[in-house]
Length: 214
Length: 258
Image (cartoon, rainbow over all chains, first blue to last red):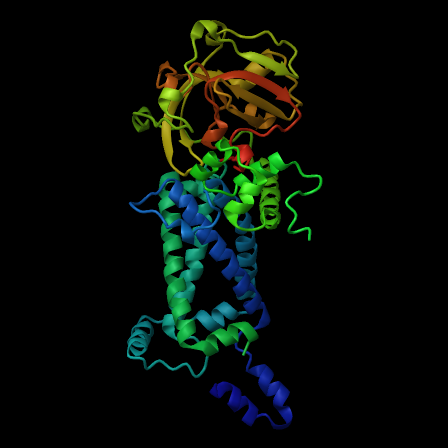
């Protein structure tokens, strides 16, 4: 809110330039973010249906929140959405390094910073005035979910091709444990998503920034 | 107007119902097919125009075909599936089929003949005694089911590739199709048939293959998912035509490579 007003107040003759500088999320980030959102939801919901065919834990997912209707349908969705997820993810990771976004936005993370910011967040005292800078908790969660994304793709590849990519499967301790790793990485991503969505709702201007950029 | 018409020009209604049934979950699908459903019943059942869902289904199937091609490229004909020690064999090994063990084919050795058809020079059927005389070898490999579970088993039998050469199969053909005693069918592409671990199995865990695991002959393919490893095999056809298979027709990915 204040960001918009401030940039208008300071506008004057150089208004266009001042506004341009206030872009919080560049267009490429917004595009890959929303493609990723769609791909992840398809992967997670079809993945739950696939899991239900042979559960590794003592529960199954309600079919109302799964995609594909049955195992065969879910597999078709999962192995279609994987292309979207992987190519979009590659664009994000490569661009994240090349533009310096990862370095600028996600580093440094200090343990004491994480503790202080967690305390501040729980006390409701964390500032959201400058959305272009992430606090230590945000940095940790974003780095964490990127790593979970890498693990989910790698463990997924090792389950898909446990003969052709058997060296990769061995890294995860074999086919059966790769399934458990794949599940845990999914659970980590879903946990992130819950926090991520709750916070986006609590701080709506962050959601606006991810849609219109500022 | 077109959206409301129940008859779609140029579309076989029986096939359309069969295709649409693929969208349903497993048990419902079976009942559905058994019940002799009509297109009208389908529209009533779903409460919406069935035609709408076909573009999504069609796109998914096209991507699945693309995935077949990708997997054929990934397949390394010389890469062996990992092998395991005797102590890691799952005992009892799971029985898995779309029917119960009581309903499984009960093939009689005396009546058994392996029928050969298609692009094969010598189509003389093979008796079990003749098949048992083929040079055999043993493998302890991991069977991985499309459902996600896996189990290590021990299979003994003859190399399928050697047998295909012996019977004068045209090895430039695209597929070998397997016909099973209960009517199950599936097919493998030629490079997979010639993989050194692709086996015509006659024994499980050093015992004559029991009925549960496909007596008298199973095709063991450790580079493919379980449903591409047919049991109770009574016929082989060498062909260039892709003819689908039992599960493939329901929408499982055809290549299903590991």
